[in-house]
Image (cartoon, rainbow, N blue to C red; front, side, top):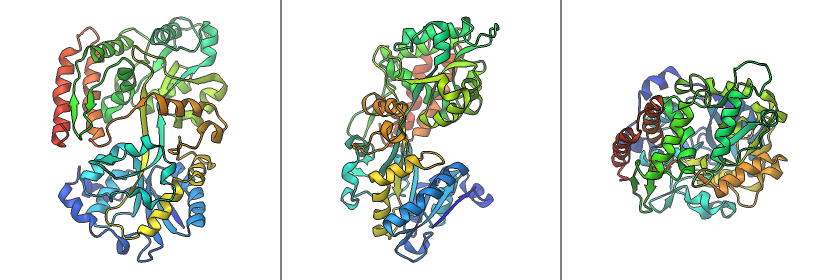
Length: 444
């Protein structure tokens, strides 16, 4: 067993330079099999990557020995910083890892580049345990091109002590939510006698699509939608429906009223916005459950509550995200690969990945027969799992989710920066830009 963490070499950064061409990567895949994997020519040794930093590396350093003992396969496992650059560099070098774990929304990008082997469910002993909805998320043109590994949703977290001080219950509707935000500004919930508290924190920069990732839950809750999956491999873009415009105006109002969001929200990424909740400056955060451990430290586990999303005009839908296991198109070590994948999606594997001592690298299990709240002994994860099953949507994995989030974030940033302006004109511009994204991929 070998596990390590590495950052990209200068060669990799220079070679990446942007988005690799499909033709070049198709050529790369043909030679990425047994002779070029991390395990060398040994058919029972494979190379596997996951995206992450040092903490993730420590987690897999605990997990991989259990994997190897259960499967008899030797795994050279790397946790990779700047994953996209390294993967493209390895593809250009015709030396892809046999397996890798990365975001589910990269499915379409990888498949179009020719990097992926089509999945045969019967190859995996534990495939039948995965929820049918998760398998459906891996489909492109009738074939499966990834194995579901981990899922999660955005969750709403409220300062429970602020609610008590303000005499309010956990908000269950948009109206109650806005009332809480306003009370957090005016009601001195921290009791220091100063007007220095705000409603919620928002990573509102357009950079890397941050604002889109935050806003989509509210657009869906309002009954809006920026695209529709036609079910035939194509999408229809509609950004100006009555429900969508109404939801966008509601988001505008959050930014228009002083204090409902933290100062500087429109230029903040998560490194700037997250501390506002940890430091007791805002009373609400919409975030991923991966933040539970950090928030248990600050502001403190007993000072916040995790709740279902306050429902808007059309419900409490929240953004769902996750990770898949991807199989290199060029690997020749299918027996070893299938054993490893079968372990990762087994109850044993999923539980091990959830309960290692460093951090859960599986958040909510993809299996339909596992209960996250029971495994974690933490009811907060039940909120996440219930949201995933009953009230979640995701960015379309078959498309280029990064490009979609980017154009949405840029338009939304423009809209909320000028709350006095009617958003319809900018939403019409967004329609054109989104259609260009889908059309370039042959998905319109």
